[in-house]
Length: 136
Image 1 (tube, rainbow, N blue to C red):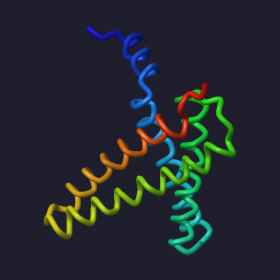
Image 2 (image 1 turned 90 degrees about the horizontal axis):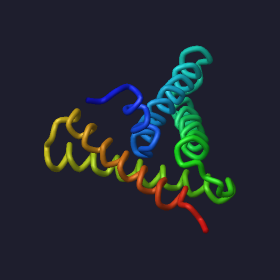
Image 3 (image 1 turned 135 degrees about the vertical axis):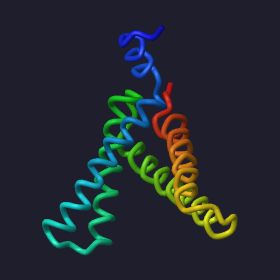
Image 4 (image 1 turned 90 degrees about the vertical axis):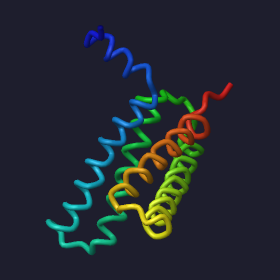
């Protein structure tokens, strides 16, 4: 039987679970930025979307660096590699989504779900083993 303490300990020790929770936080931040810029300030939707993604990536980087992976690495190295990892994972996400919908004739919802899973796993592996690896 799981107690709340055991669940909390599991979450705290599991970097993938924390990575996913941080993903929820950065998504909320990103969408908040997008919709604020779009609706309140009337900024073009493409610019709003871009700035929202940038805000989400910055929040994700900070939380993953200091809370999840507790990295002591240098930001000058880690942030560019983190951002590049995001670009690669997002590009793979789009490729998987497009392929599933256009070539394999899957529904858009199924495509989004599968592509998002691929994105999450790829981005996590990159963050865990490349960006925030323990350096000796």
